[in-house]
Length: 450
Image 1 (cartoon, helix red, strand yellow):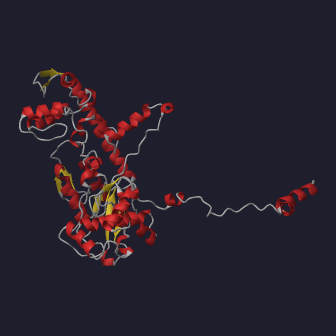
Image 2 (cartoon, one colour):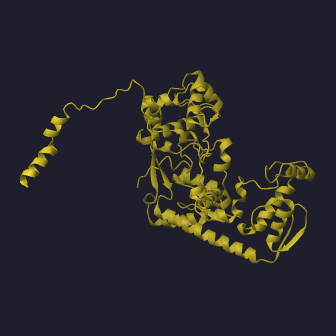
């Protein structure tokens, strides 16, 4: 079957499959924006369990799953969407290994053809396995449910466990019995709270992880390293850093909330819970502010929070007028998406998108583009208007969110002045119009019949 993923909904999906030696084998993220979107780790516990390839006899240890995903891409041209959201990746792979032996892989995967308008010898098909397929979605949900049941059982065992023994990380007081005594002590006596005991799972591992950071003289919040314990304690006290960093996804597996809903982080679940507690009658949006979308320039690291600002920057600083390109080529939304992803990828791989010349570094290609006047020199549309460029080169590319399908905003700003003609209603022949109208004839005919 043939599917092309919607560019809007797949902006947080898989890496971009690219041909040749410059293949991008994993999702890219802009450095300043990557912390929240791309730092999430799997909720799976560290394991030496083998991860099998669903299409051959190859396998790899679970911690080395990236090597197996690279193998799938290069050897089998298969991409699995949203791998980090799969609760039990080994069982997921084993399921599809069995299914692929029963039926052809193309019966389950979406097929994306690269360079579809180019020469036949340069075209290649890539397979995308994702939850668009009902069986895949069902499998992911079952694995998620099973993982949740296992975690809840583990939490209950910890609640009932009376053999817990641990030292306080700040005063070395010894605690035995229930884990809640230690957690409540640290919150009450040292203003250090990692959450309510009933929200924590794998508590001993969690405390050991935090203790290891302190032993390495690392601040638990900003994660900076200090020269001695005294300096570290003073820093955490003065800076109010006696808390953990919520953006460190290493801690995700220790909180029950992260296991509740498939594909949702604790922040998303928590925000939904907060909305349910708000009384509709008390809604006050007067001070509401939209979260700014930080868009990065195509040619440098400059970031802007609005479409007008980033367009103006690229035009003034780099002589690249994206709006002009859009108007001259009459580009729709999806074509704009593909063009942006094409330019991003070419520059990332140190290629000039205008003449396709290869350079040693990104800095060299940017210098060439400016010096050679290739900023506005785009190749033929067939070069970049390809299905493969539906995939974002950078997962957190805010520029894609600023693209629009039309110029409605500009038309809305057109002044309604005297230049706009107003056609008055002509009522001079209104009486004659009524007498000769079709409705009038129908009424006369109905009256004569009666």
